[in-house]
Length: 443
Image 1 (spheres, rainbow, N blue to C red):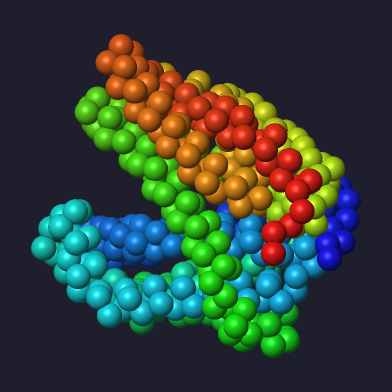
Image 2: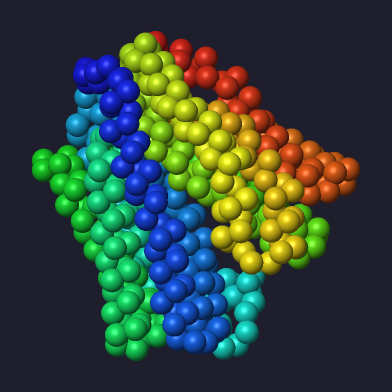
């Protein structure tokens, strides 16, 4: 039996998207406070230790970012199909994966830290402080990975105010405790780590409370369903495809920085500043991509093709409005933003030369961002994986040639082409996605 998914309206799209945009806005604030608080200690090493420790842990935990996307798509479809039992069982499976992953990191932390510092060497002083920082934060790894799953469930259920609440509590509590533990109690780097540990467990507990509907019946502990081989196989396939796609996406952006480093310190610094604009774009677009995940997944689960198309069109329409607005914003205020981010005259001048590329990035990239959300909601993750493989291969050829011919302008052009390749390849598979809504649901 299909669930009543209802019409997709502008208000419904905004109700899902705007809390995500606000939630994302809290992330850079926390990073700035972490750095600022540790900076009051008057030494360089603590700043570097917190920075490198946070980056390493974020990269390690990011491996399990598929839990958010995979959970969102699968739960949205189960909800659209009216399968309440499966929405609860899916959350249980995701939380079990989070718990197992967190336990792995705790048990094998010495090995994880060793590999991380081998790949990212630092001075003995910085590495020692970073290890102390990470040794505390690693104990909240089950919590922060669980937040991925809880966030995905809330997005699928169109309860993104809950996502905002989790981020607001986690980041707000983290900021308050940072100031108290470091500046008030003088705990230094360990104080930052303890603050984050408490904040991450608080966020996970709040998330469990916000997802309490999933635990209100017995579906969450229906072990025959939770461990059903067919459902486990589907979940594993979806999550594996997303992980492969995400690794390739990250590899493309890492290669961008490597190429920039070869072009000189000034160019690298300018590109790093301009990449901050890309983060702003992603924070804004995430809200509408998440809305597409929830609405498209629900419509597909209910086998309502017209509603699916309506969801894809309206979420993309709003994303297009935001993308054009960001392009205009960057054209007008981009130079002033650059000047705020650095006082180095040569870096400012270099960044201004390539500002045009970042100004058109929202318009160039909006289709790829939204198609990602649409395909996640439909759990067409095999298409996502295959299209990313093709796009990454084309990008690899493009970046080698363009950098050789045009230098840094070619590097930025290659990045724009990467988003174009992603949009074209995924767009070519969209008709098949719509046709799936006409097919009878599989058992």
